[in-house]
Length: 245
Image: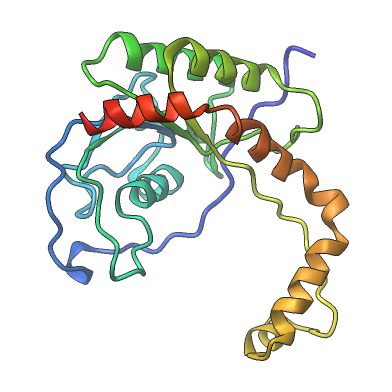
């Protein structure tokens, strides 16, 4: 019950984008209040230069070639720039801190096999709070154990995050998870047929298909609920005051 299979980040499709594809964006000149625990980041990417402060606490960057630093780089870009396809988006005015907790094992990015996931997270959070000058309020953790989705019982990893949030006043942004199971949408034999249908029937058919599988997919939504209802109005006001200051 105390030792579970190691967790890993789901593969993510990425396309290299250069700064030349976008107009000039204001520099991030404010100190960081957010940290990203994920894979190694291509910090020298034109769109991330000067926007991330890397802390290679566990010496994992050297284990991941630059070409395979996909998940962490994608998450850093999402946090800093939002959706790059949205012309109205603007980057964060603050830098973010990145702490690699995953390596590349030759096939995919995953947590080191010689360390427990909760051990890495615990050490990383304590280092951020006690041994850096940054006043970290938010930590993004888009990782999870695909072999043990939440189903009524909190895992040791979840209990650790709950305690760290309470003890250090940190808001953890947790990925609810990726359900990679197929959904059959009646009336559409292929994905192309679904995409080509511009009528009102398409969203209705999708909602009916999702509703038909809600008994199987409710686990991940409950994970989100468990982690999202904890902040009180007083905590939110306090965090906003510190962030604005």
